[in-house]
Image 1: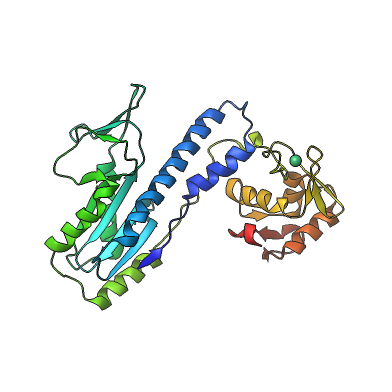
Image 2: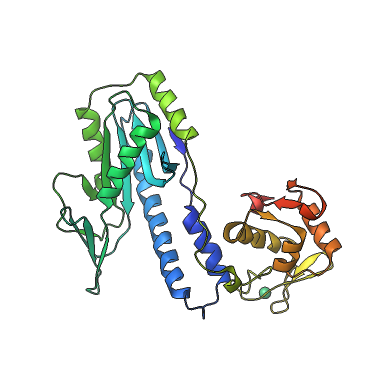
Length: 318
Ligand SMILES: [Zn+2]
């Protein structure tokens, strides 16, 4: 049973907004663009592996969590690509979408990727990451039952060449996932009763904590205002007669403001005052600003000058 659907990570959501609002001439643009492209590739790779689960036979009672995030007892975040809870074991998958060859050196705790153009780059050892997740999951769920935690590193891109990697850790392509899971199901004994399994799945879900990732640049560098989607977010729209108008392509609508609210929430804050709204959205009149904000029908806190409007995560669907 799928308990947690695959969602974009907060980092990817933040980078999507940043790509709309950072000028290509900005000195950090290429850095963030590369990071954005890596996140997109990661997300696509995860979705590719997710498909393996939906026709996997004989899984028995189980709960699946995609992109499970929690905070450990020291307040540090963990993000697990896929978590499978069964009556016999808990499986943690780390999914990598990589083109080129991957070599992992356990003694040096490094992963080296050789790109198709021959360039080499070193990364954090993903096996260390999986072990770290396991240790903190045990503490999080207070697993006093001896449910084994198994980790595996899965490559989503069939073109990845798995080079020199440790023999004692499961590392394989996504097509091997079903065989690996079947082997675990065969080899591990039943430990949890159905009720305990259900309780544990509820405990895990209640400890879900999504990270809030904010950009590491000064916000004075981002484009403000309601940007025109038709014009690839390059043109700031003007508010006229209750509609947003783009002088470049001539389109008019009411909805473009929602995208801007979403970007504000993701890049700046989920709270906005009337004056912050006017400043960011380019509206001069306090009354016009109040009307727009009230019409959105979103929750507020505080009174008069201290009033903040709370931008909900689902502002797009409002
Ligand atoms: Zn336009």
